[in-house]
Image (cartoon, rainbow, N blue to C red; front, side):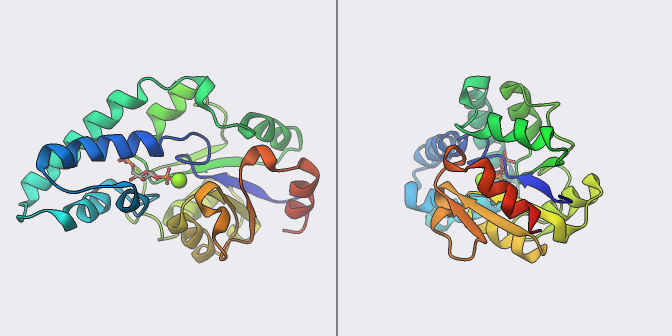
Length: 218
Ligand code: G16
Ligand code: MG
């Protein structure tokens, strides 16, 4: 197969989405801004500043640009405190065996994440050297649903976009992959996304035989 696989990080490799929720919730509570899991859902795959704009929709006063930057920095400090606790045991079920299979078959793998904290997360998980390419929030101008992150990953892998398959948990990420001209496997929250090419509840449920067939068709 000529295919390559690009993995989203948060929600696919590791459940940092709960850490994001806790950090935004702490910030919102301190600022007296209403925030719940439903609003949090809209932040998946979206950049930090765009996430803040969504959180501030419920604010009862305007925030200056300087204040917004300070809020984003504060949220990130809370978030980094939480992700310090990550260990290789937090890698989601099914991920490790899948990465091993892909490597055995010479299929290139990459990370395509909106998160500027990707290097720290990969390091905490012991996955810093596992991928052929990592493109994260530090390298891109436009966050998902813009295709930039996945297009850059394909470029770094040296594989045409049409031969890349993306694994995503967020609707914004599914749209980004499709906009990049890639096929997309929706997992977790995106398992119910009808726009995804293929869906599985969890990577632990993905059979290698089925995936191999899917990749061979690319
Ligand atoms: C992740 C999360 C988003 C988060 C974004 C930016 O993207 O899903 O909720 O807002 O990163 O994170 P940071 O503040 O760490 O730069 P992905 O693409 O890995 O799912
Ligand atoms: Mg995600």
